[in-house]
Image: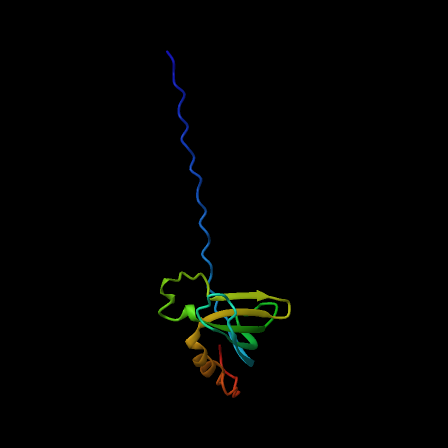
Length: 141
């Protein structure tokens, strides 16, 4: 009588789940700011717009939260983006709102914002008008 060898149960590899990332809020006390704007001719072939416009707000300040980092100096650059306007962003699947790079002396954050949000952010966060460069910077970002 011949016995057939038992089939080994296939071992299924357990999938490791990616740990959920903790959401961290960064709060910066504004100490200084700069608004940059320039307009140039768009030299790209088949460009949709004949002009190339660049605007951004750079905010420098002291990091209030989170605490316990090696530095409390922070520079935040806000870049307006047409693709983040309400009608256009509906199909986006973002994983973050920006990026932070850590240096020994400071943290640098770059954030894209809806292009129509630049003026209200300047008014509410910094008490500034990006066109008049009026200063009054003692609020929170």
